Amino acid sequence: MFKLELISKKLSKIYNNNKKILLVLIFLLIIFLSLFPRSVEILNGNPVFGSDQGRDYLVAKQIVVDHKFTLIGAEIGSGSAFIQGLFQGPFYYYLLSVAFFISNGNPVGAVVLMWILSLLTILFSFYFGRRLFGFPFGLVTALLIAVSPEFITQARFAWAPYPESVFILLSFYFTFLFSQNDNRKIFLAAFFAGFVYNFEFAIALPLCLSLIIYSIFYFRKKAAPYLFIFAGFFCAFIPMILFELRHKFMGLKGFVTYLVSHKSGVVSFYPNIQSLIGDHWKSFLYNVSNTFPNGDFLPPIIILLFLILSTVYLLTREKNKNIKNFILFLLLLIPVNFLVFYFLKNTIWDYYLTDLNFAYILLIVYVLFSSYRKKNYLLFIIFLFFFTGLVLLGINSALKTTIYDYSDYGGTAKLRGKIDAINFIYNNADGKKFNLLVFTPPVYTYPYDYLFWWYGQNKYGFIPENKKEGTFYLLIQPDSNKPWTYKGWLQTVIKTGRIESTITLPSGFIIQKRIVNQQ
Image (cartoon, rainbow, N blue to C red; front, top):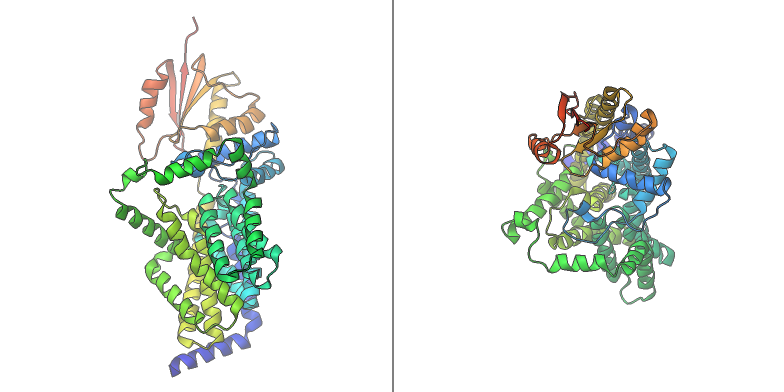
């Protein structure tokens, strides 16, 4: 123990003698890791533009161009969760509409929006960490958010669940401020917890339930705070409530049906309940790993157990009631999430657990802060080396990912490949009108419908119709897992027309030109 104390004192001396330099270095690292690799898709103008992005941009077009407004977002699980009639909130579509309007419909605009929200998350995490643990540990909090793979992905990929992070943090922040007994802050904690349903209902549900359980522990028999909590939930879910009233509680009925049914199309993949729980447990462990760069360098169960045990040990010695209560709330999130998802008959995707990514990072910062303050040399040195290792791994990953991804063409998945395919078809038609049919593995042709409207019409003056008449082209996106499936589409759906040419582009798209002779 004496050696640990000596090492700790030497580290403290180094820190105190070079405090300004170290803090400036951490600040510069945060800037570097916030920009790289988060900016890749903005710099190369080549983001992923798949089925969900096409669908969402078509809705944004309806809002901005056609002035058709909505009370709902996408269906839960994009229709694959087997919960009929239950939808995410609509705010993502309105947020996307702002990007659509400013960028004049360019899909890169949505990625810029995600990038801005990601930077706001890092900035607010610093402010929140500083309020909790002081200025140096605020920087540590922001740095851990900056290197986290989960939060880097959110900045680079325009998708409905990804703007959620800053609102989760806002809910955490106002939950921490429960100690002020300010009813406005209690209302805001509940409002932002519920507001997350606009992006991912699977996060809002356990977050709201955790807040209710925590409130019972915190307020006990006080009546007024509960009124403000449920008022916050009510305001957050107003669009859903109005939609449910208009459609005779369609979503609620679908949710109840899902809960009481013994089988679903997804459950059939699991031979028994033990297999389902085992799959859920693997998802939770993957979430632990994905919180940190190269998170599989240690078994995630070891990271999770050591983090929880260290936190509980330090909490027993914690004298600051406000911090103690908030850390208990973070710990509460873990079992509540697992309990809620116990009833889920589907796979738990990582973006269902973003609140836990934040919880793990804040718990690490707390252990660093508390062990340093309480002179627990063993824990402090262990977590300091863990933190340092994460930062080094994060720097290495940021450099490699940026260099590789900047030049990644992206095949059929990214915007550039799709635009090149569209250009090829129009140029091959040589100014003549043509028809077009699209084959894509997700079945729905949303991204192509949108791109022909936004890009094809603006550049070439017309949008091809979906007809097998005259000269028509087939734009085929082969399924990477089953590359032969499009042949069945050709034999059953298309059949007609004389084949003039078949070309495979560098992106992997297959373009076939056919002609139906007019009688």
